Length: 256
Image (cartoon, helix red, strand yellow):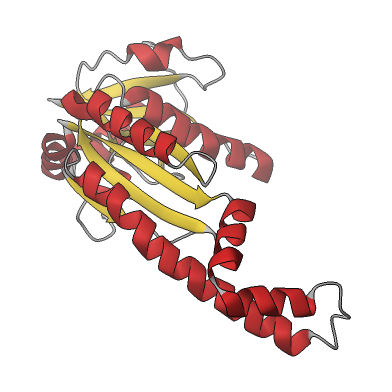
């Protein structure tokens, strides 16, 4: 992370961290844009250069936004600012218009998230394995599948629609059964959980967990244990640590 303070007028705001934060992980990562801290009292804005850019460059900066914050959170509490937040006027404007005006709010957020990071878990079924399980356990689904297999799509349309409905209902029943043990185990370690919308039909769980930094190894081990139990039937993706995006309990902040 750079210590110099360039003269650029438009600055991209990544997030808020404690003043004096030593962001070693961020400094060590290659391929990220140059960033620096603008401090005011005990808080600081993590900022970088911004100029009027083409759409693809803005998209790249939005990707960097998440990467910068997720690197920073390894070493310090981070309050994320919405991607695309830009302050015109350089370092002084960031200090006066952002930090000074929202200083108390930022300080409260930093205090709230200081002990924690967010871990996001996405669990999906291995489609073929679960379909075999459903077909083997449901005679009507097995019959419909056999009767529609290799038949003309128009002629078998009614049967295919019914088959799809039955499979969808069966997946929902499995999901309710399989998600509960995952949540129960991880809720014993995490401080809070936020369930997010499922991203696909064969998804079991999409949830974010607020985890104390001191329990992060325990949480990771818990996920690994559950994933091993479901090997061949479910696929686990664990993302993080990251800032506590899902646990800033507030309406859209005035500074975002």
